[in-house]
Image 1: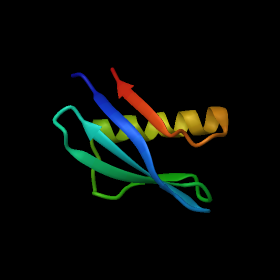
Image 2: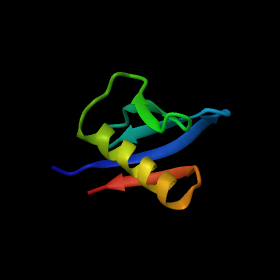
Image 3: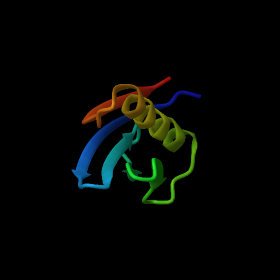
Image 4: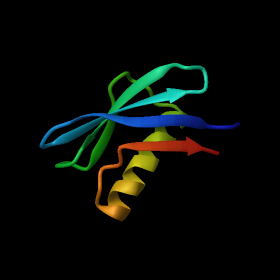
Length: 76
């Protein structure tokens, strides 16, 4: 099974960063990275393989670089 999503930062404040990601069918989903608690949560209730891949990609870049990425792509 192939996974692909385009991820973009859409909103930032002192505690959280909101991201939107689009799947290969053009469906859009949002999730939030809470920097204080270091938790990523879906805003639409998505909890599938693609959501987990997107959350993992954001967390990996954030923890490895210490920066909040603006745009990312997940593919496998």
